[in-house]
Image (tube, rainbow, N blue to C red):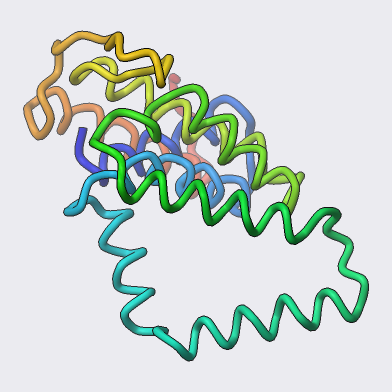
Length: 188
């Protein structure tokens, strides 16, 4: 499915399944896009790449200073160096793996959701829901290595990416979100 479809499905899922407020919907939206970091032209990879190009060395200095300040002020985040290392390993794996492998697996889901839980525990469930809905949608539109590193691919090709079903799912999800944002009762 297309990135914008994943985004709509993740946000709608957060509304429907958790009744999440805007922070939870945002977390689900991020979770719904993150698995596609492994695809160079995806919405997530373009945003991450653009951020890196725009911040460059200044961004690295900022995050280094932020880490140093948190260490000095006894940050509430336990095991911060280990979390930063794990996040770096996750990003390296996501940006270098083939599409629909590591980031489209239960291991990728567990690692990324664990990182979010360690930093923002109240948003971790919504993030994980968005990520899981991405995996489910991709299993409808293709096959993923859900049990990576086991190479067996799981899924169907019932709804090709960018096809009519993709569009219909996006429109229904967007309508559901809009109806809930304006407070209209829906049948879903």
